[in-house]
Image (tube, rainbow, N blue to C red):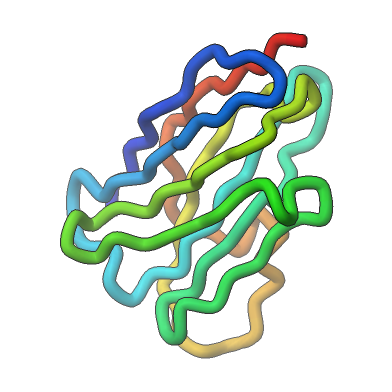
Length: 126
């Protein structure tokens, strides 16, 4: 499975941006997808997650109510729609995937994921 992110860019505070994660090789069917971000000098943190089985989602408290994750199975893509962006949302955003076997997984742990994209930069100016 190969993941490719797109859609990052520069936006003003309060603006909106969407980033996407596409499987350039393989299919996302059966894979749980997580979005992580990493700012310079900070650890990688989980932002959002969508399961493969029932479409359940999770959001970090810092983005809850502002970010929305969605799957487009027909296009083999997962989107992260980001509204009301803040300067502290500035980071490289990565999508990651693991095959969902129905076992318990700590979805905020980067080590739970087997496949990663190369990242896309999101910069929010104040």
